[in-house]
Image (cartoon, rainbow, N blue to C red):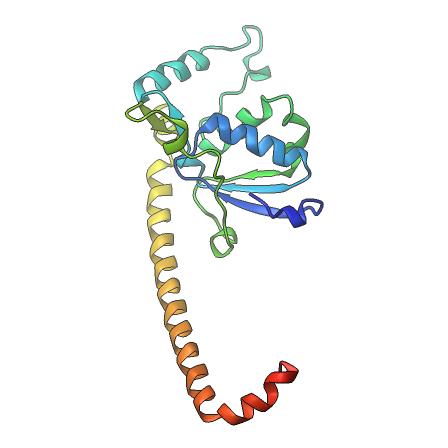
Length: 202
């Protein structure tokens, strides 16, 4: 997730989530936060939970019934948004509770992180951590079933963001091709002069 050469520096790493296992993800993020890294997590709605949607929904509905009889506002607090569910999962791990101030979690990819380079966590993908054919569900879908009302809005905004990103990527490729072509033309015109400058690495 980070460059070993920069392990002593506090940096803000953007993590893109897509079909990553929730438990493994929470453990890795908790360790990174304890090491002093600042982590921004985006697209929390695409975190994968092992077990089918019906099973996970029944588990969450049982969790919703847990409350304090005399004053329910004292807790437990039942978050519905995927970003807050991930936050609570990391908080529940003893090693991650003290480092939560360095964590930011978002549903979708809000600005300015849509323009920043994002990374993935290679130790937590669903395809490596779940057996083939094992049932799973996405955290965003589960949240929409238990009271989160912004699932469709986030999907619509994500589609628009991906369209803008594709346009920007196509433009970047075109500019790269033009630059390579211009450099090749310059080398052909300035061949002898470039040979003179080569020893001094101009």
